[in-house]
Image (tube, rainbow, N blue to C red):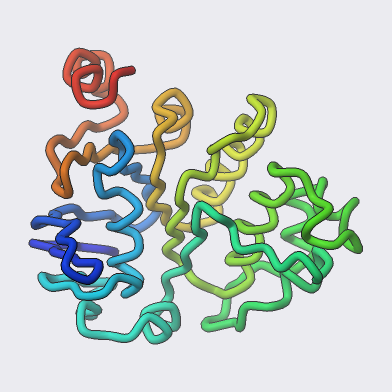
Length: 230
């Protein structure tokens, strides 16, 4: 579904990605692992065209995206859930869910999203700034599910959440995979990542330095410890 080759990216004069190579198959959950500053979030932002400049190749379902504007990338079928979540404080939960446009058929309805996140249904009329961190994360994920996008880019969905909420987010990611979504997940929480992902890419200093299938983790723990400090 997604093939990235030689991806370079800049914020102004700052060169943040130095030739990223990775691919994601249809229906997979793939994680980007790495320490702070390794280039994980910059990779997601570069895919969406949200960096100052980029070069290389980003092919999505055979379409080259590296020269496209970010709005056209979104309309091609890629949805981005940023770490900061971007919840509109003055809008209630249902209004937040209804904001993004539908770019393709097959998006989830608000009722389906409420079935996936029962907590949100209970808070349907609550303003965004009255939600807990976990509820805001559920809302941020739920909002992109309406669009009809089939590739979801999730940036640190477990960051700062209580263990019981992290577990619920994990259940959600596995359910999205069952429903046919493809997910690229940025994570620092390796323990969480290994419960949801098919494969893991490890990044350091703006490049991919390792690649491990989930079933090969036991034999790769020494390497991962060196990269991640886990």
